Image (cartoon, rainbow, N blue to C red; front, side, top):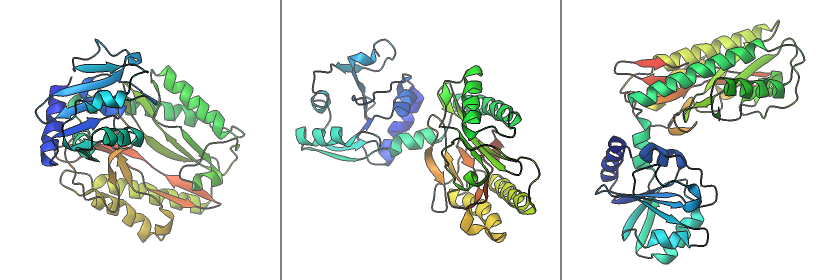
Length: 347
């Protein structure tokens, strides 16, 4: 188990008035115990009490014995796993993280009417938001490998190649670089498809004059990277050049606003203002960024409503975009880590 991280979570539990929480997200269980387990439909739960007592509930099929020093209670497929857990939780409020399937919660409520489930993700989310030195270095390496991969798929762009072919090439190169997989399905968008921020790459073929969006990320030792590069293939219009320059300027403005003590909504405003002032405000249709680490999307958002104040160790994306339906889209995305006196771009 990771004692400093567990203590951070317990401190956060006190701040949120929680005596006990259930942690079920695989990334959060790994963050605290050092073991990664994908439970699929089976129950995985780490019970954390504010006195420091931890118990991991896991199916015997997960074969976690000996992989962590956290006390463990195992169950079999024929056992009522919720009954096993219900026998141990304390009465009163029980913080449950946002990923625990509702059928487990409902069954727990039936067995323990003296337990009142409440949303309990914040203690772990707040801890994971601030990366330690080891995590930041893993994110640097993940981002460097991702940049290498993106450069190589950029070099592979040629007339007639399909979005799916470039997507497959990205995954192949990621494997060659030692990644365990992509952080998310790579988004490769040619021409008008780039006007859909989350276009599902298909058989569209690249042609001269296309704007190309490559939104890609890979996983290195459990840590995710994420970046977006937009390139112009062949001769392009003045409008395509102008829109790219605006988005690139918005990206720079967002990064320039990143330093300790700034509200996330103000970083969003810095990037968004550039696009609005250029007359394209209605075409910037999403938040400016999101936290990232063990998960590709983590707390907090960098959005117009986020009151979260930046602190050293936070890592998040700055990814403004303009999307013109039927024409093209442009997005430029970088990851930054907040430092003691500013920020360090990771991409």
